[in-house]
Each structure stands twice: as structure tokens, then as C-alpha cells.
Length: 208
Picture 1: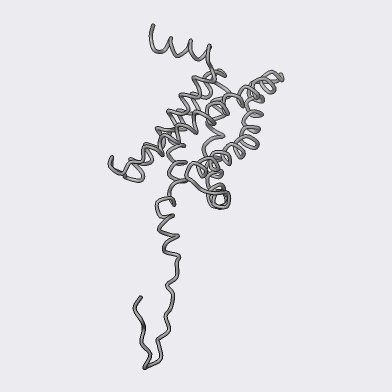
Picture 2 (picture 1 turned 120 degrees about the vertical axis):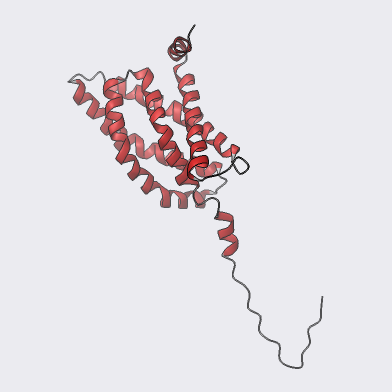
């Protein structure tokens, strides 16, 4: 049995599991690319746990979330009648105006949680990163989704999206981690030195 045949059979039998695994692998690959080619880390400083966390986000959130959402669109919009072009435009509009903002906010919040941030820090992260990421999303994903919903069968839509998303995940990993390296140093650096007033002449200090 060829690998392609095995994949197709597994996809039909276990669609959510297969798409969760592939989403995890591709999100992890995006983080590896971000660390190696954008952040220029060598293998000694490479953060394997960070890549594993991105795999976990893809496996637990990305794959299942996308597959369920595309199934909802296919059931409620794909069978609504009308031309294929109109149906595709409806799907893209709902995907980008409803799902994308919620999904990206969930991803950024989850990444912040896995980075060890508390609620206040996650809110700060969302305020400073969410707008830029959502705007960048609108430059790329409407066009990808037009082709995806128009040309690709439901079972393969997550695969296409996650294949393109290797580059998107690279950006997402870089964007959500670019301030992490200096976070601790920033907190330490924010401590102000305590000014010591000179002692009046004639007084001596006692060493303790």
C-alpha cells in the first residue's frame, strides 16, 4: 500500500485525528523555521519545548477547530443552493469575519498561557499583537480561502490550509515570541536604584 493510499484511507476513517496530527506537525515546522531562519538560532540555543508547544496547539486546537468549522460551513452554506462562486464567497466572508478573529485570539491567548503568562500579561499580549496579526491575516487568507473553498474537497481543506500555513505559522511564532527573550531582562532593568543621602560629617556607619 502506498503512502498516499494509506493517508487517504486514514483521512476517511479518522478525519479529525489525521488532520489534528498534520496540523500539529505543520505548526511545529513553522516554529522550527522561525527559530532557525528568522531568529537565527543555532542548535545549542534552539528551544525544542517551544516547538513542541506549537505542535500541541496545532494538534489540540488548530486541526480540530478548522475541521469542525469547515464542516459547519459545508453543511449550512455548501447545501444552501445557488452558484458555486456565490457559495464560496459566503464561506470566505463568514470565515474571515467570524471565525478568523475568534480563532486568532484563541491562538494568541493559548500561546501566552503556554509561555507562562498570567491573565494580565495575556491581555497585554493581545492588545499589542492581536491587531497586527489580524491585519496580516487579511492580506493573505481571503485569497487562500477562495481557492480552498472553491476547488478543494472538504476532507482536504485543512491540509491545504495548514500547508500554506507553514509560512503563516512561521510568522505567528516569530510575532508571538519576539519580545519573550527580553521579557525578564526588561523587568529586571525596570528596577530603579535607591538613592542614598550622604551622612552628615562626623557620623560613622556601623558595618553589619
